[in-house]
Image (tube, rainbow, N blue to C red; front, side, top):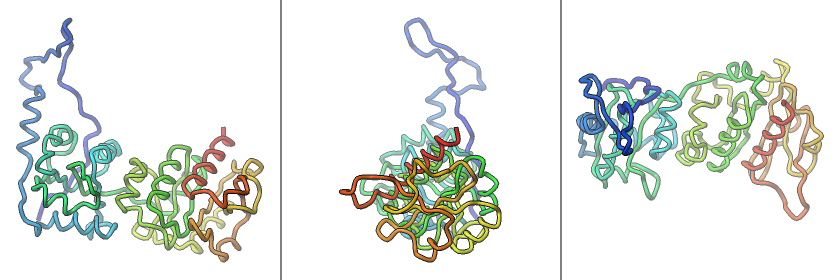
Length: 315
């Protein structure tokens, strides 16, 4: 059995004690402190070289990326230096970190921030590139455990902002944008209804800029199976949450809508919008006024505008 990962450390402090007048960094001779070269050497020693495609962790990373789903053990595949640093900042638990051989210097930057028990693998460039969906990989990837939330967890956060409910949203970039805007403007969390793109899609993770690691999401892989919109709607209404649909044309103009009370705001498919059976259960429909020449707004843009207005009204 491979050792399981542990939580990433919250911060990494430079060993510099001060600067000389000439601008150079002065390091202490304290034997308990390491200078950067010693830290780099320590990081390199943690790397375990893997040549074969059949290594269990390599297979898990490949499948998680190709299927855009969690591994059997519940890990999400992520890639890119900035995204890994966001995962560290979000205190996610790392199971394994993978470095491209030609980019192993990035281990010097990342590994001091990641627990010593986490598996750290060094892969030949060709093998590493074959595992990732991006055309120009940045040389580092990881398997991490996302936090899990139920619908009740999200409802308990309604004082932070509205719940965002997505029905059949299929574009990964739009979902990533909505997650990012939900965190930026304040949202209790996001419910991903049936037909919505997987939040573990690498394009979603990248477009969210790390918000996917921190924002509560309810989906079919979480603690609660309440990802079906009908069931979610009934539970929300039973707890006094207003159900608000968005429409590209008809509805209360956004600037006239009251978004201060506890609410769940529904956004539909980029082309078809919300299903009729969902619209029939709504308490109100709102629309963003725009020129007649434009048929509709991009789903990510529309959600961002609505979330901004909800945040403005709460001030």
